Length: 215
Image (tube, rainbow, N blue to C red):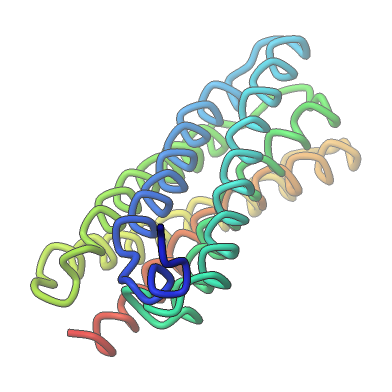
């Protein structure tokens, strides 16, 4: 007969790492889709991309809920439960912001998406790639940190590049766009993309704090 109480004291590394990997995969899938969404040539196409991104956002939400449940049911965890919860919540923020951008594109139907939107979407995708690599290294974080440190540094570099693109976009938008409604639409849409790179950098900062704490 299985001793449930004893089982709760067993280490659960094999549960938390795959769940985190699943969240990183959802971010990567959503980031691929948002590139297509910002380049959609019709409202119908934008709606289709939004629906697919929403599926990834729901998947990330579901995994975060699983992680929360595991934290409540597990006594021995690979890292402090506060760190795991903070990390998973911030990973979820990335998918939430990608979804928020796609939703605004669907709702606002801007006349023309600027080139800056594509560049920011590419930065989101690049961030997602480094996020995935960093999450893959979590299971060896206590033994080796060289690779994971580099991935986290890259997230900060991408965020700064995204900031620059967004700032230059705003300058151009306010100088050249005469339709006030379009200004509001485009500013709001691209802001969500820029915030997604902020959230990805925040994940990197959490992991760097974990490196200091556990390595």
